[in-house]
Length: 471
Image (tube, rainbow, N blue to C red; front, side, top):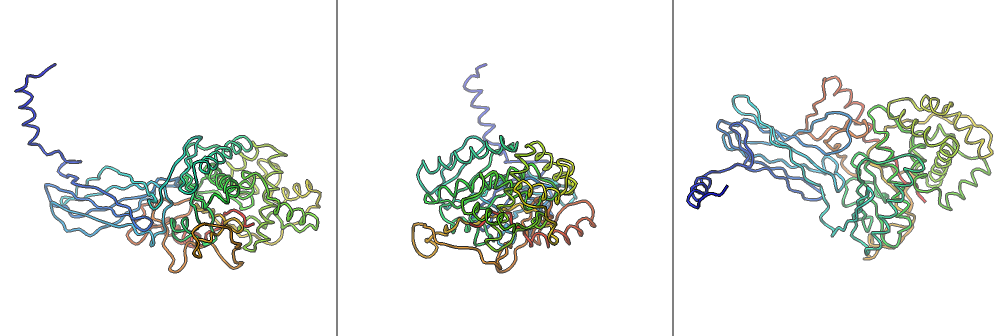
């Protein structure tokens, strides 16, 4: 239907006098609602609301899109001046909470309470926590999004192809698959990577965040081969983390790292030599002693990684991938490790140890001491490759290998100096992580909150390493 010109003019005249708010509900109007990023320090949230009656309080609800064990609501309470036109602002300080990895999706909404007690919730909005300090390029495909800024197009393509290939091997060899893409952020130097995520150990060369499908790795063109194997290692942590994600289960370190080494493709020549020497003099630690974290001493840690890989390889080659998947699912569902092993393989940890030792022509050996189980964290740091701390850290502009090993007394805590409070978002891998002082966690039952606080905080600050082996 066509309107005559005078009719059109009349309609436009009437419409021009109307003010259409960004969003309104009842007598509350959202005048503005924004979030600004100052990477890697802060996110500033701000909003303005108008209402026909006084607004008495405004609460910010916020969080991060990730795998979660329950409905945990983070809240902040900005100071406002009550009235019919109210502005509210609040800043998420990453140095207080612990920071997010680049690529995280942050959501927020505002809860507005009027003088008569009625409430209005603004539409949920999201913003991507991005590292804007580098000119990122991206290659996507095969469930892998690879972000990089150092090196040429062939460098980026080689890393992307290696990650896609590793994902294919995990699917074929172990039966592990992803239901959504993984984002790799490839940093050209260790210092660049550590500047992007606060409170990471100085030896970290890569960090995996299974609950967010994000991996950070330091890879320069001169360590491309190490980078490819590390991609596969960290990708395995993410894929296994997805399958076993649970608030109930516990993943032994030997199984987690053994799978990551299997996904990486096996042992390096150096690690294989150490493994052969240990087999020759029968100096392997018992499998039960590797349930918790590996040694901080380099050679012992390398040997533990080698043993873990050999055991996992034995399990998959001898019994097939189906039993391994069933074992992982049992662990996800909260089944104790020995029971889960019996369900799938017919033996417990000591029985597996004996069967594996027999497969490499060694006699059975009893357990050695008691391992200390620790909860599996979301953040998974990886050692820098041997000699891969860039000279750029001491003044040079181009990274080159310089030998480094982690100190035997070093522990992978979340930060140095004043300890940060955990990130005020949903709890990763069953660990209760409250936010800062301005955060209220809405979990049913005050007793449950108290218990989780008492248990979760010590576990968080005793962050277990689930990292790539030192070389």
